[in-house]
Length: 278
Image (cartoon, rainbow, N blue to C red; front, side, top):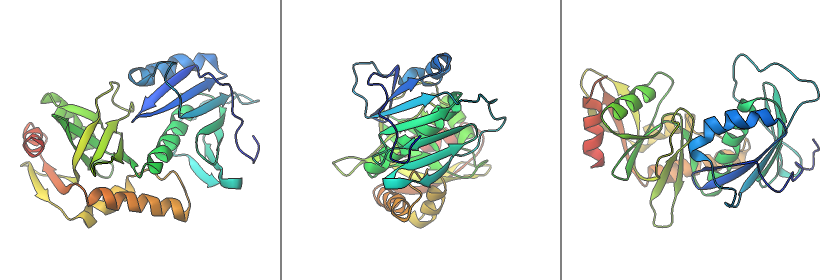
């Protein structure tokens, strides 16, 4: 790996994955990795005829190592000439200045998945959007996105919504970006939701709380912003990158309803959300 940027790699990707309208082509030196990645991204695979917006080249390390027992968040460090170094347990990568090319040295699918998350967050940031750790719920093309700390109830709410026949965009990472008419769109990702759902219009963004009775409460944008920023993936660890993240959060919160969903672990939670999205 050189400081000037990653090598362009082969022209034709063995796998092409489309997330939130962004397509990345994967070149894998470890051929056995294609099977696990197809299972993870199966519903998000794109035909080879689809042009790739970005390319990830995965090379085996010179000295093989065992996969880490615990997955950690990657460490991001600005490199020379606008490049970005990404370091994680068992892998190392270099992203080009335009974030469209990645050279990865490592093994196992988690290295690929983590780099795709960073690259997707960068692509969304270029659109003025965000990659958010939260749960996205859809009803008739309208979506609500809820964020919160670990244990706040994101996965529980997603499960209750499914049980009630609702569509869950994702309960791990949700892509959010603005469109020309002033609206915001949301799309799911494959993590924790193995099916591909349609994009939806974001109409509400809120936090979560527990209680014996489910209800929808108004909440100020400032309170929601504090939680949202803690749950948005920062792809650019620079003052400009942090400024862009804060700016995007402010714009989306000024464009949609902000709320707090206080819910019980029963069907009433889905009823409250559906009534607001109807």
